Image (cartoon, helix red, strand yellow):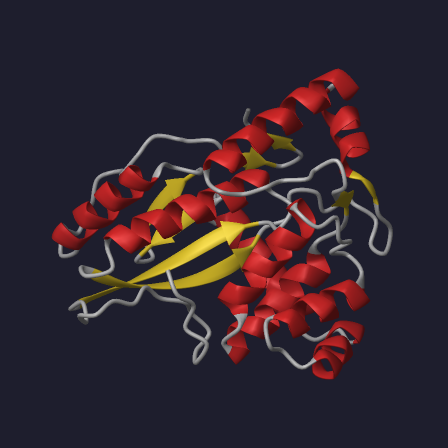
Length: 253
């Protein structure tokens, strides 16, 4: 899957141009392990579909932990211990998602991950949607949190991540120091609540089919092919059962 840096979306590309186009809104948080795992699985599906459909991807915000204090960070393992009943259970959860992530080619280092409020990160992703850097930035922020131990609640760290994907650091920092994008992100968070999106990742295909959880690649392929076949249908079927995901303050394990 190749990010299209000329627009606010990302799309699959191939040697031949597919005749179909499909918009995919991915509701997720940058501190959600299943969102990173689900992104990799979706990319594997997109690679299989590259000759069949042009997938235009946009990321939408969701906050798993909106109560995290802005400007403050702490080891995520401590936060997991408080949420899930102690350090032993926290270690089990972290070990499990780390093992699953490794199966998708991701090297998690959650022992260095830092709990942070993600509102700034979502505002930055909103800015990046308009500059054509959103897909690359989403990947960088997930990598920063899960692999690099970077505090993604820190404006300077976010500006560096943005610079890594080609966004001008000065412009980014000025944006983060303002209130720009805050209202728009809050509106999208409210839209998620109104749409009854209560766990992430959630993949909304063509504005009408919601696929919850980090489904395997074959499930994504099958759902997208079914949607392409039934696009004219006024009442499409529900596409799939739930898969691993994160809900408010918790993750399936």
